[in-house]
Every structure is written in C-alpha cells, then in structure tokens.
Length: 421
Image (cartoon, rainbow, N blue to C red; front, side):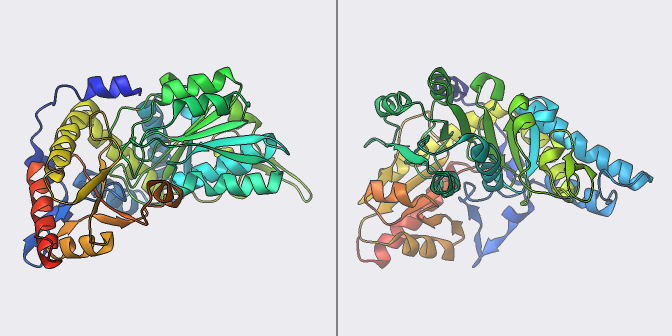
C-alpha cells in the first residue's frame, strides 16, 4: 500500500463497536492493582481475540496430528487445516499459494532470504542497501552476509522529520545494489514508507527488494502483487495470531532458484546415502515439523480481522492515534519522534524530559497502563535520534480514546513523582 492509499483508507473513520471488539479479548478483562488493564504495546505483540484462542485450542484438542505424514483421519484433518491456512494467508496478501512459506517469525523469514538467496546472489564488492530505521532483524542478517561474502552494507538515512531521504535513496540505487531491504512501517517512528515507489525505483536499477511488513500486516491491507516486492515478510503474533509462526512471501521464480535454508523433514523429496533431492516449493523451505497449530490460528486471526474490515480497522486506529498525538502534545516537556500527521503507523514514540523511559513505563505499569520502553531493537536509529531509548505507546483495534486519556493521566502522575509539575 502506498502512502496515498493509506491516506485514502484512513480519511473517513468507520464507526466500530470498540467495546464489543475489546470484549473479544479475554486478557483485557484483567485488572492490575485494582485498575483496568490498558494495553498499549501491540507493536511488540498483540493480544489474542477469543476466535484465535479457540482455533489454537481446537487444532490441538480436536485435530492434533503431524501434517504431511499420516493417512489416518486426524492426520488428514490436520494437514487440510494447515494447508487451508496457507491458502488463507495467500489470499490475504494477494499471493499465489506456493509463494507462501511458513517460518517461525519475521526474523527467521529475513534470515532465510539472507542465507539462501543472499549467499547465492551476493558476492565480493556487491552492495546491500537498507535504511537507518530498520529493526535489528533487518540489519544483522545483512551484516553477517556482507562480512562473509565481502559485500558492502549501505544505509538510506532518516531525515529530521522521521522519513527516508529519497534523494539519498536514488543516489544509492545508482550504484546498483543487489538487494534493498526496507521496513513498511517503522516500529519506532510510525513512518509509513511508500514501498510501491521504493520497489519500482529499485527494480529499475536491477535490485531485488525485501519488505519487512511486521508492523503493517495488522493495520493495513497488504497486496504483494501491487507492491511488487520480491520478498515480503510478517509475523503472526503482531497480527493477533500466536507466537511461533511467521510468513515469507517470495516470488515463485526466486523460490525455485534458492537453495534450502534448513534441512530435514518436509523439505526432502528423496534421501540417498551421499545426496538428497528437495521437495517442491514452498515445502522446500519448511524443514521438520512445521508449527501447524500456530498456522491454523494465524489464519483464524486473519479471518477475524477480515470480519471487521481492514479499512475500518485502519480508519479507527488513525482516529485513536491522531487523538494520542494531540493529547501527548499537551504534556509539558514531551517530545514525539517521527511523523505526527496522518498517514502514520500506530506506534507513537516519545521522551519525557527529565525522566528515563524505563521509569515512565514502570510508573504507568503500576496502574495497568502497558507501554514499551527501550531502543525497540532499533539502536542505529536511536543514535540517529540522539537518544538512548524512548517510551512507545502502540495502539490496536481494541483501543479507544479513553485509553489515550489514561496514558496522559498517567504521564501527569509521572511528572508529579519526579517533581516536574
């Protein structure tokens, strides 16, 4: 989705029964210290609606059997549900069925590309281009690859307003990098990158492109064909699904050419004493027993979001985030990092002058307001921003303006405790 498309999707907030939606999350009924739980850390991991919990329970309690192995009814049921989940994911992102590889998470998906495609296509003197706003998961695999292969790792800088320097991108693309890695939505800044434009520019210069969609998949409609990225990855637990399941989309012709990443189990066609042959894609990249129950629950999460409507989710979240930016702007001594205007992502990073982010999060947490504090796995970006860490409130479809008010009230208490008010 382009920035312009995101703006259209969030231009007219659709009314949602947020109280009803929140009631579908059992954990949100909890109290902390006698106060209601206000969960504002969905960028780290999303809470799970009952539909997902029920799907996971059903997969294990009613259909549990290893997939692709048995011919008895339980095994056939489990395999059908697992491969049905793959079809659900493929339809959700606009991919072909065989272009969906299940991984452990988005980190493993990126490592798969770096180890398999990277080691076959990146050599001495080649360039890999990523950005200063990348998560460590889209930095460290390329550092390892560059060191091993004698390649050069380059970065697109971030501007003062938290966006990519597109002029610098064009200068780097003129050097014909082998691959460009870019985050769809920054987990720290909330910046929505215009990935369609970035991919088109990179392809004109002969580069392959990997998009980290971990923060986009729960919040925006994803169409990998429109984006035209060669690789697109996201993780299940941030999209209301369980942990232990991620997705790598890759164009089929690339998967066909890529060597296996891990060996054993389902990725094998035939094993002889000295050599083996591989299964067809996508199973060539799914070694061992795959997380089939988690995949089934991920499909349930996507169906659950689809039942609400991604445009409605995006519109509602845009309203809550805009309200949060306005309210946080009222807090004395508070600085927001990244874009403040829509379209932007659902994570809002900030610093409160005179208070360490960990202290902010700890004091808020006493009253059940859950936010993240730290470098958010973006240490190079933190150094670019000139801070060691930030506080981050990140919003989901179950949040509403009252949650923002609780956050702001809590920040007033933080300031009182530290003698700032």
